[in-house]
Length: 175
Image (cartoon, rainbow, N blue to C red):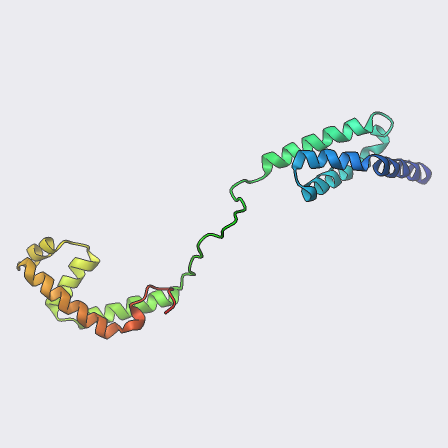
């Protein structure tokens, strides 16, 4: 194709779009239901049709472009992920996990537990880290359930004193 034919073909395409663009846009808008998406759809289709214009310009180009609009919209619809939907209310804000604060808390807690007397340390480990009941802890240590309860209360008081108020908050929570 020489330059004259290319210019003539380009003019034909431009003239067609100028004359029928509003109707094609309306068809795209009816397909998508959104003005911006309709513009994108029409531009995508026109960009795909333009190189083939010499073949389809003489036939029924409007029918060809309408069919291309429908097919392109269908492929966009199939490909689009619908996992997110806009809402009026924002979801709850999640806290950012501070790994360093977690490590600091673990080390402080481990140090505080190691400072406990051996019996209280055993009770804290069995009751709160191993998640055993009072009766199971008493059976393992060979003592009464009341002893487990009283020693656990004393151990927790000591841990609170050693850790201080800054470690009593959950990791990542602001005071």
